[in-house]
Image (tube, rainbow, N blue to C red; front, top):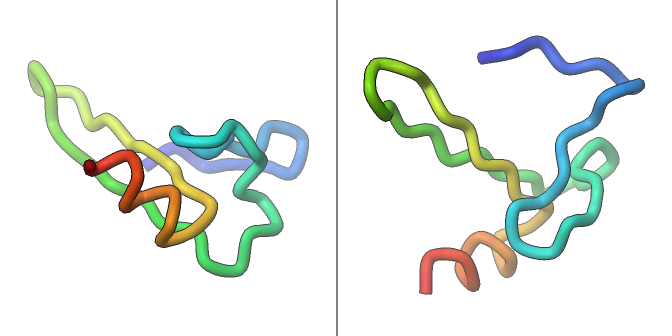
Length: 52
């Protein structure tokens, strides 16, 4: 996984909010063509909406 800094926090894949201060943040990781892809979510609710 890529090291993240406060200067470059990831955004929630569903709503676009920063996950830097999210207490419930979730990460879904997959491998596509040999490359790890990480999808960040600020909450379980956003993750569930994205999965639907």
